[in-house]
Image (cartoon, rainbow, N blue to C red; front, side):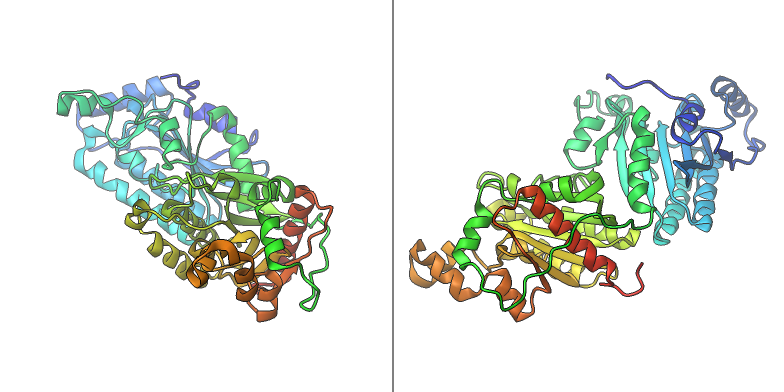
Length: 482
């Protein structure tokens, strides 16, 4: 299967945590009450693995940041989880919640321990309950799935992370392929239960080797834990409402031009420490949006942006993209981070498939979620703001726009057809509908407009946009948040 090196639990502790920082939280395991045969199995497993159970838990630091670390040891009865292991995990999670620190976990398990039957199986619920208590406290939970991770482990604490990755080539699945083959008389299709396939399908966020796990945790925790840093980008004086603006059609052409700065440029030039999250984590992925944990000019946030470079007639922004956007909204709310939405779309998908995928409902649910969020929210109309797809990410507490950005219920060409039966009066329609950023500023729909310069490079505009977003977050969009 081409998996990376198989690390022991103690090897991973040394690999991921700062040297000398690990403090074990594990109490001795009492094997009394089990049959003599099973106790002999446990003793043999302990001798083989060099651990007293299939999980080790404790506290350590990652670049000085305290975390609780929960690690499977596969050599102990295939990393299976019995009652003692489950109670050890739940106890560690609750201890982390009481200490107010993140939990990071690395799994490698065949699932629930068959020797302990239903009681061990039911204890997966207690692990999940403890994790949801931890998450309810606004604390991050990061998960790394090693080869193999299956059964009850994958269906409980392996699938509840805010960020979830798996090592290259890892077998990750609900039902082990050997059990499937025995029960069904045919092999499980190849390639389905692999880290790479699950990442491609939007079930997990990325494929990351154990050797890169410290880097990943450091990147994520820099956004999730570290305080805001000082801004380094120069903020431009916002455009005044009474300035003489470019014609609407001129602005529309600006935003449609090749080389126009988009969300990718915003992250490349205006952000740092960006960690992309891919998919809904529920088996759907749409490349027309980008979801990321990042720091915009020093401010940590969750960002969701429409990627104009990936939207075309062949690859329109479908309902899955909006479900990814709602994942970003949920993450921001739960992790108590600001949410930044970036609007740049020629419009949402119009097709039978989109209708059956609930495109209208997803637009409505994005709007409903965004208007009820309690964390600071900023939306930036970066370029094209067309139709319901744009409206879905618009209603933040603070709405910003670039000078040439625009917002319209339909493409101007479509509005012209409805009004006049021809596309030839699109420019006239754009003017009469008041689509320009400065029209929106005058009407109060936009709170500030970032000026654009004739000699702007994509990097220049991206930095100015990042500085404006960060300014509004720093200045108290949600008073008392910082």
